[in-house]
Length: 161
Image (cartoon, rainbow, N blue to C red; front, side, top):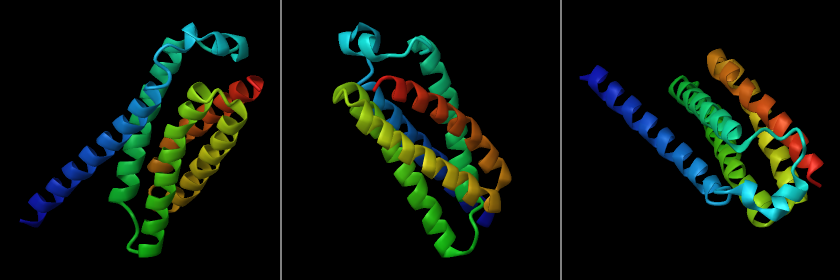
C-alpha cells in the first residue's frame, strides 16, 4: 500500500512541475510570439543573438532539465523542514522571475529592468545549485546548463541597453 501511495505522490509531483513549467513558458510566449517582427527588438538585439528557433529549442531543453532537477530535489529533499522550505521558496522565486523577464524585456521594452530580473534569476539559480549539491547532486548538475544560458542571455540583454 505504501509503494502505491509513493507512486501516486510522484505522479502528482511530476504533473504539478510540468504544469508550472508550462505556465512559465506559456507566460513568456505571450510576449515573444514574433520578436523578429518588432522594430524595437530589431534595433536593440545584439548581432550575436541566435535565431528565434534556436532560442526556443534551447529553452525547451532547459525546461526539461529544470523539471527533472525540481523533481529530484523535491523528491529527495532532506528531512530538515527549513531546507525543504528554502528549496521551494528559491525555486518559486526563480520561476516567477524567469516568467517576468519576457514581460520586462519584450512587453515593457525595458532591458535595464529585464537585466536586473535576469541577475535575480542567475543568483537564485546559483543558490539552487549550492543547495541541491547537499540534497541531490544530479539535480545540481542539471541546473548548470540553465545558469550558463542565463549568463549568455545576460550578455545579450546587456548589449540591448
